[in-house]
Image (cartoon, rainbow, N blue to C red):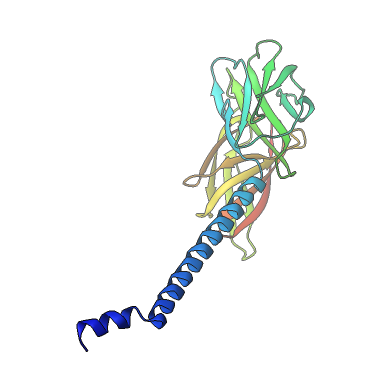
Length: 245
């Protein structure tokens, strides 16, 4: 076949139609990929928007031992929240509400309590209940102390029994205030959740290397929930109780 015949073959109606069909197929594939990318992006954005509000910072930080009283107590969230003065409270060591002025930022991502007078030496607990953008209520608590560390107390051990019969031991002191909590028998323990009837919210403390530090400002019975991460997606919880003086 000579050069002229090759040129005619490439320009034949059949070859032309095939090239057009291939272009249309690639165009359709490109359009479909762009459409799927847009759908995935919207789904991720929607899922993010529906996520519960999370804490970015708390000031003073949970477990802080301060020399000087803070002028404000502030919680910053990762999204705007709805709340009120009645749902964000600062408590003293007797679980009495401290008189404060409640304010929020314009975008409602941060709420602040300003004490009416300078906080005296002592231990304090902050508790909150807010409504996130997805409509869920998020509650929590943090603690700090000004000028005191509390009562050391005596060393005590409490145990929590796993379903397999093994135990996790919590080692600490029975005095109120700042304390170190040791965990043995639970190498995968990642955190503690502490509850007290006076607090009315859950105080969370991370566990790193078998130890946790925190401030427990109220005397009486505390319930400790030990969180053990058993795999990437699952965790187990064990409870124990401790009485502080």
